[in-house]
Length: 430
Image (tube, rainbow, N blue to C red; front, side, top):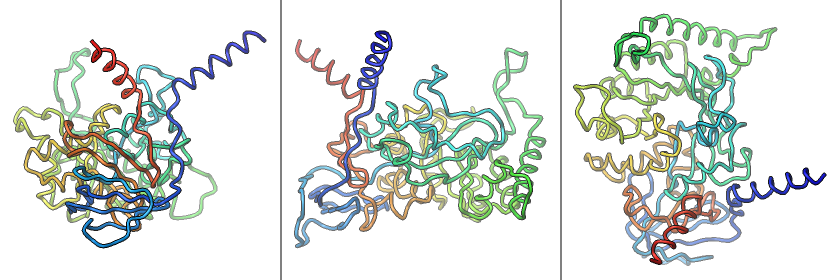
């Protein structure tokens, strides 16, 4: 019994030391934010703004010069900037804590074609990695399984919750498909050349994938005596209730994916990655396919690409008239906190600053299908927003003083901020 008591005490101490802060309580009274430069998330700004919200919803957005009563708690944000909460698509946040610790890694299940695997039920709302997103303004995310040909089903959450149930904003929003690549990396340890080599199984892999999609379509078209969970999960991509997120980068792969999947009657496609999407922009526009372009802080894939190709790709796609969002599928989860700075990199390549903000807010919300409630500062939408000392796309001035999710005043403290305070106090005192 003594050993059991000691074990329980140690367990409670561990939980106390490592658990995330208590989620913020619901909003109990109106809040007014006055004087900030408001970036609305739709390409527009208000230089001297007045924003009010109550019961988790925005009730007023306008110019501070307007003669209207300020109500509730008043926050003077003069000289600061206010933004809708940034949205991170296509990440396994909350599914893996430490990649090297198998017990904390729940992002990849066994199997190649597993659309019925639901990421949301494995989401850890107390993840230290998730917690670290908030101080940079990343307040929402699409929790996405990884691996396999069809990885599973994602859901969209907010980043201040007790558990996965109250974190969920939109459950089972889409299925994620990794399209086969025409080239693969050579396995030099098996005697293959280094670098890219042709994928001889490309056509066969597509045939197998399309056979699965066709069988799922037939299964959903009529009654069946045998229940098939993978086929059931696919029904949403045929009736339009789920999006199909297709991960593809090469020109041929993108065209093959568009042709094959639209011919099978899939209603809503989203291209993820899209390294060569600018080469097939007309086809993407013709099928109304948006692009979640990969993060900009990376080197070009091919020797004959411009050195700054990844930096300027978002602008190329925006200039081509596509609906573009920004994500960082190829980067580690912890790097998701840098999402604002990936957009800032695109601004350095000539993209308008407010359009870059749109890539993280209004556009991402539209692509994920949550734009009726999130993504822009508009009356009637969720009061999910933050106040920054300066430009939130610049790492020098992205310094949050307040952040709200559904009107709740959330904590900006994380393990990293605690360490920063601890060691800054140590060394500044010398």
